[in-house]
Amino acid sequence: LDADFAFAAELSGEEPLRARTVARFADNEHVANIEYVLEGTPCNDVLEQHFCWIPEGAAERYPLDFGLAVQSIESYAAIALIDAEGTAFGWIGVMSRRPMLDGAKIRATLLFVAGRTSAELQRQQAAIALERAHADVAVHAERGEELERINAELQREIAEQRRSQRQMTHD
Image (cartoon, rainbow, N blue to C red):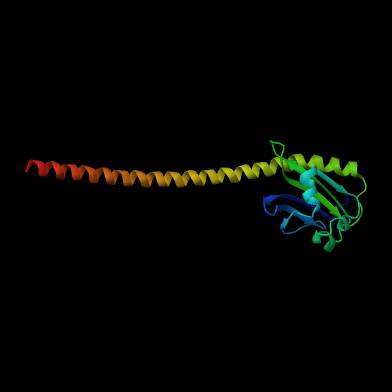
């Protein structure tokens, strides 16, 4: 695709709507992931339209996206990652300092990669949710053991009080 940048991102919060990259490459080097506000970015358009291709003039078209200007981005293309319910939860994209004019090739390539990326990100999200559920179960199990211990103590105290009351009534 002759891209200088490639990335995968997912939604990370609302108000304002935010995203975080989960993989990011610049000039064939892996670079640190970032989190950013979506308003005024082409990524926001990807979420709404599920595909965004800007063959040239990307930085001028999105003046609020300072990253495009700083990196001298001329062209941008990204496709949404769709979950089982049909909702976009992330996207993969490429950017270049030169025009990317073959829209059909770009879309086909991104679509091909998006399927596998979507499955992997959903698997990771499910694994995180499962870990959280296990942690919740552990907390509830611990709390259950604590309640059983308290219940046993209360049962002993009640039994002692009844014995004491019976002794007092027999005396």
